[in-house]
Length: 75
Image (cartoon, rainbow, N blue to C red; front, side):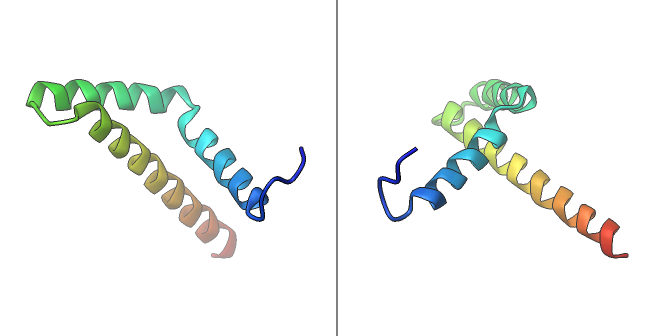
């Protein structure tokens, strides 16, 4: 793939991280469940809020898993 801009490799790494985040079936299940709950509660822009919360929960889970892994290696 040819380099198109200065931040090509940084952007490529970000896009791969996002794909790894949202590709698992668990992500879609969580997003759909949150959307259903938020819609029932009458939350404005329920789909967008559900997406943001699902992304946030997967990022936090990934961070927690990384901390546990590091503790396992070094303790």
